[in-house]
Image (cartoon, rainbow over all chains, first blue to last red):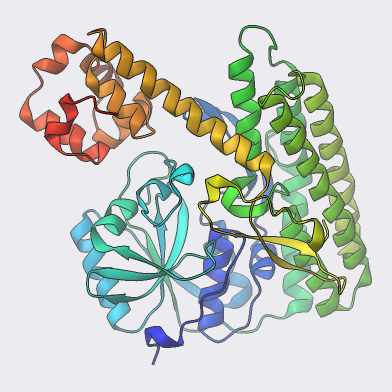
Length: 333
Length: 132
């Protein structure tokens, strides 16, 4: 039996990897958050100037939402069942039925409608993942992995968050495993997952994905005007930094978490080359933080706005990631 | 980043929460360290919030002067823009834009008013008010 009391909340750095590692752990297979990210090949970079969010282009340091939910199915032999709903009533009834049957259930929500979030972080971002593990009166018991402790959310608020509309509308999405995860053949699964990431970072068919996306965004930053339109330029670079995700990955944009995955991979496969590359990726994460700091100083006018200087930092990041993933490619062979 | 370098700058934007970050600990392994925030992130988060607050304040001023409808103020107060409000209400963007004109807004049907209020998460009567 899975009663609410035997679910254990664990603080994580990112919502989807946090929820998925919690689900897998709950159903019997110890799995770290970085391993969930790495096995699902969920690290990436994408710059889609034609998709606008609040007037600014889509920038992501990872694969699209649901990549981890889907990506863990094959390596862990785990069938994830996903359901969306036409109406909030049906969505709520199904969630209640699953919880009463003892399941833990992943939910896609909009941050804006979750009252337990700090007000400054409540933007209309529709792909935030939380885990429901029980209910108590009108409250749902939620494990939101980016919070230190479990939280509660009233049913009306949760319904709003699950049925928010707009870009990436969740449509009440809930997900749970059918059956139990099995321990993968690490010798096979880890190199396969790394090779997929290498392919995305180095050889994506579009020049907007992977390291070429970093180069492309550098070009856009270089052209940002410093004169009268500087406020708009600052919003653009601020957006680049925000997408490294404040509740999330602390400037390193998933690079530190992937480094931790490589370190774990080095141990599991007894391949010290991965640990060396993890060290380099930590330094690349530091480079992303350096970019964030330089941008923040310009936004607050501690330094004059200098697009070419920020572009140079981004190009350097692109170059270093190109080298790292090339070496990682060789290390898996 | 080393665990001791994980920023603990007490960001107001985090509302007292701590976030999990991966950093290299004293044992040489990369693991989770709870962070109270980093000023650089506080700056970019506040930048986005302040931009929306600026748009809301500006819309409020114009609504008081009768140059726009209160709907524009409520839209920015709910951290939305015309694109998002149109997606959430299911109305064409040009209709939403039209409803920002005071004369058109004044004649809005009760059904449309209810739709806007639901999308913005406020009570219908509140739509006409401009209290900050």
